[in-house]
Image 1 (spheres, rainbow, N blue to C red):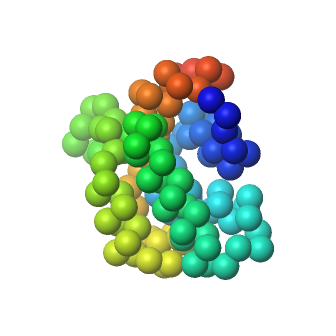
Image 2 (cartoon, rainbow, N blue to C red):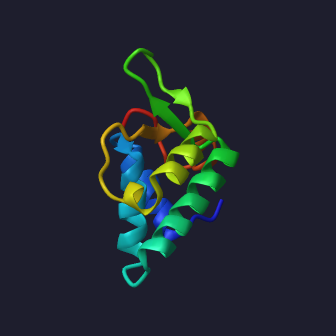
Length: 112
């Protein structure tokens, strides 16, 4: 599977440590430094949609021993937060790669 530089960068980082949802937008800003806040929001949301469809995201929950497959609820969080959600916000969902990311992306290894 051919990944964009943004996808490679973010997946590589997620494979090593969980990230808050808003950090996805930090990666978008890094790869598209000239993008407006609205463009960052749009690109980041589109990335999340694509990864949800692929099964590439899971979320961490304090009450669960293992990550749980991410759902469209992430999109609701993005929509509720708007541009403010592209920056730090309390209670942001914590993301890790879902099992399909490890299956689909040859260079990823669990537990690195």
